[in-house]
Length: 176
Image (cartoon, rainbow, N blue to C red; front, side):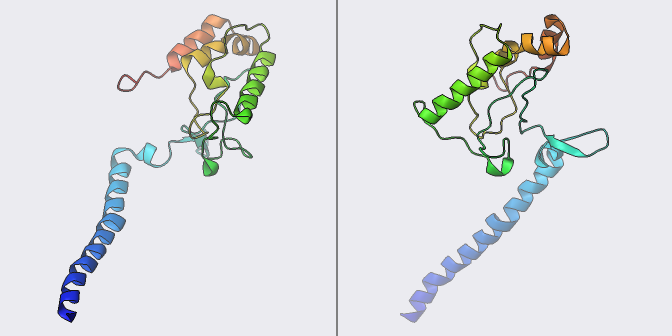
């Protein structure tokens, strides 16, 4: 009886130990190494640096812009500290949740107050947060909505701002 139990436990324990080493040590080291070799910028957080070399942010995390000369991004779902990567999460509010509706209404009012002459429909990504609550990207429609305000604040003609949007709009990836 003892040998039967030992015969059954030995392979199970060996498999657990082997899988722990392979999946807990070797695989993470391999994937990290491949990432560092093939995609070093992305593997290290897509960090942005200023002219002195100091890290000033990440291309993957939005910033809270509220002055008229900047394009405003999506709302942050990281409550107390906007765009805090350590608190990344969506709001998890359902489409009929009163808190979500209040946040959307407040953001729509802020957008209308910043540009009262703009009567175009407000693009949804300007009044809602992304799934992570950190997304720095806005749709072309959201950028176009803000052209009159940004152009006026920067004392540029709208055609110049439209050209800047065209030059900085990323194409679709795999048609999505």
